[in-house]
Image 1: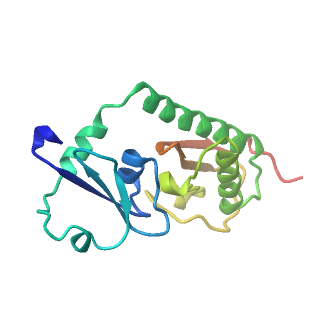
Image 2 (image 1 turned 90 degrees about the vertical axis):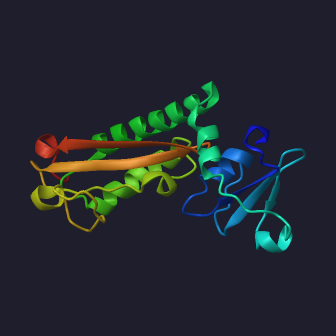
Length: 186
């Protein structure tokens, strides 16, 4: 901050993008918007409400680039968190493929993946990449989709897509499964 002549850094954080708040303070303001106020000297302050009312004399300068530059180089711990998120997804996808059966709905498969992600130790899946499970000849052509009650059939392609959030770090995974070997329901 001193190199950039910044006396006070204010980072915005909310449900859609809690990343700056999480990175700077390890707090994720999930139910409301918040600002993290970091003075050049002293402790950071987490506040919600209007910044201009709290600091009426402050000159407001966009420091988005500075925060992204700070976050650009990862520490060994940050890399380990991303690797753990990827391991959680690897296990969740292996379980999904192992339990996949013809007649399951896309929503059934989504529920299984989400449960496996959370059991694996992730904080969340939706903040990273909500699972998308398109199946069949028409739905697998879509880039984005909403899962449905469509039942998967033996012999068709099923896309498994999801993400996991671990200690504030994300991993995403997408894999196609050939339903050729998917067993029929019991």
